[in-house]
Length: 179
Image 1 (cartoon, rainbow, N blue to C red):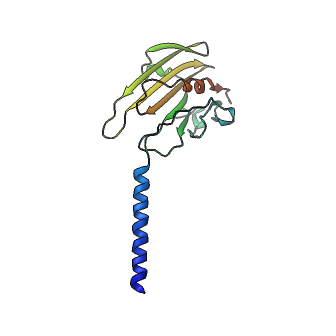
Image 2: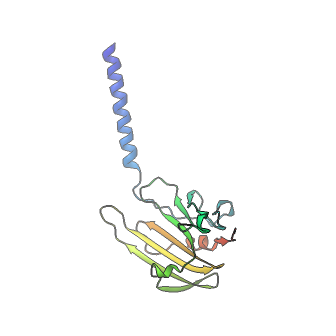
């Protein structure tokens, strides 16, 4: 009887281990989700300093903390949105508000417009390496409401340009200072 119990326990542990291994290997390495639906106001995410953006449906978001010790934030206030799909590398969308010109930190070589205001953008296709799959990165900065707003998108996989749906999410940005 004891040997049967040991055999059952070993079998259960082995099956559980095989299940976990299969689960890990079946998890996607690259998240390929790109929003397919137009921005929905019910998904609007608010930062405590007064800006907001609509997050894509079924994506999660993280809001950076603010520190009022200095009357402003010690880190740039940010809202990050990530696809919900469980993947090591997931599509991301970030909006950051800055008081200084972001072009002093990173070049934004192409001039364009957003909200009838001058804007600057960059895009870059990055080859994969042993630790990271290929990706497409895009950035857009614009002066609006007495603040610089910077949008960044990273999409992993074989994307060659920014999917146009992201511009609709950029357009959902609003800023109403709380101070």
